Length: 141
Image 1 (cartoon, rainbow, N blue to C red):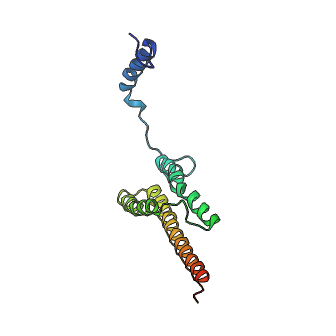
Image 2: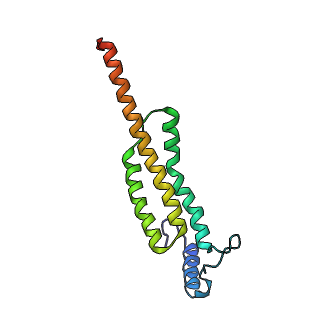
């Protein structure tokens, strides 16, 4: 019998692996103190590392907007929605006492609201410049 993408050897190895691992409860990962910072659990260190990437995902849009001095191509709704829900994540982090969740989502809230603020600033500035050009072209003071 030929399966799409699997041959019988691959399927056999997969089934045997699942059977073997299902009986190995002692292989479960235990959350121990970190070797680098003993007062942190390893899960917290991993949380800080993982949170770094997701937190700073919005920074390239902010940097591009500031370099261009324009809001062109930026969607402020996404940053606003992310900021609001990251506030919920901060609250959740406080409930479960998770330092990585609290720290990274607090930073992410600031970054996303800076994105929205910069967007609003550049939109307002573009409108003012358009009004100025209109006044000059029509000869109005």
